[in-house]
Image (cartoon, rainbow over all chains, first blue to last red; front, top):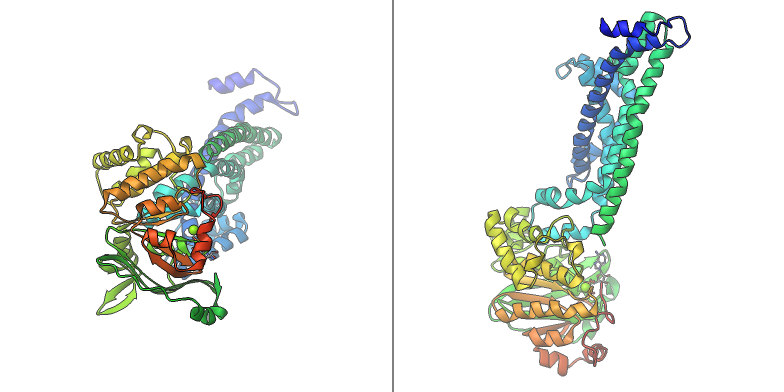
Length: 240
Length: 288
Ligand SMILES: Nc1ncnc2c1ncn2[C@@H]1O[C@H](COP(=O)(O)OP(=O)(O)O)[C@@H](O)[C@H]1O
Ligand SMILES: [Mg+2]
């Protein structure tokens, strides 16, 4: 293979840090990185959507609905994500009638998405509460329905200012994906462990994984803080 | 503001206003009482507004003026009593001759007859001026975009802001924003328009342009208008009737000349004395 031939030119297999070994295992780790990235985005999407439902559910005028969502939120936030992942992947399929098996990927993005939806919901809430009461009143005076008021008036004002905060959670979730190794998903950490066990050499794979995490999350963090500055500027101008 | 406990005693002291006959009422407040917690803000209010009438409500800050019109806009729920608008009860529904609490559908039907302009404009900051004015006709009344824009531009022309359609509220002066807010309410073609101290938040030099727009509206005739204002010259100019509100009760009502020139109540004379020689005193008697 071309790549492996190329790697052999390093010819330093006996060193503590071998560039040849690094080079050889790199393609597999890169593949695993795509698993990590897609798990992050799918889980994030689940969190964004579910978080919105949680937020709206908690504000429901119907008491039992409100209590249900509030209780769900407390429960999810009060238990470790790892326990939730184990429950969804190993426990849930055993429940009679409703349980079914899922792939590690599906269970992982669901678990992570559900867990983080509670934090996302908090962010939505802060955004929604920042919309002045007078905006609701103006909507009512124009006879918008409840749904129209949410969709057309409140959310378009509530979401943009919290986009940077939501962005921060994307990065946080990205860094939490190694948890999915515990339910057998072959994401970066699991792959590194697998490679390390195969060749009895863990230094390079784990170092590369750490480096890849940094490589992706650091620029994202800078992007988010840039976005934050821009949002602040835009928002201040609009409310001037 | 009256406390529950002393209500009984005060009732006897206050001179009952002569009830006022309205020919063709479009709004009726029947025995409306409004409490916030233990605070009685409106006490057994009875008020009728005639179709096409221009009614001004004046009175000291905290006397309950805003609460009266907020109840009509369904932003505040009466503690007891009924409000009737153009053939229907607002907060109630008649079922088999009995009044039961209204559902949202009924409330929306009746609410559609009413429009309101707020002290703080309350435009939608994320929408252009044109969308501020077209959004409700499109979403609520189901107009096509073209129809809605045509109507909106007509209204914006009426308030002198047709050239601002593509700007955002933050790019407009307070006076311009308030005129857009008036257009936004008008485009829904309400039968009753409510104005709550619409110039109180404006710099003095911007008050005139907004009052002119409202005067033009009043002159056009058919729309019923209920206005809360501290602009006494303006109230005299456009009102068919002025109601003086005092601690949640109507102390006196009548023609502008009667109430502003020759009120029976010394309290009103005292209130008006603050406005003499100063017609735009929004800073002097700001209310909540
Ligand atoms: N949401 C509320 N909660 C408690 N008290 C209120 C509320 N709204 C108004 N009030 C009180 O009701 C009284 C009348 O208020 P308002 O109708 O705004 O008077 P006005 O418009 O004449 O100044 C005031 O004492 C005010 O503090
Ligand atoms: Mg007021």
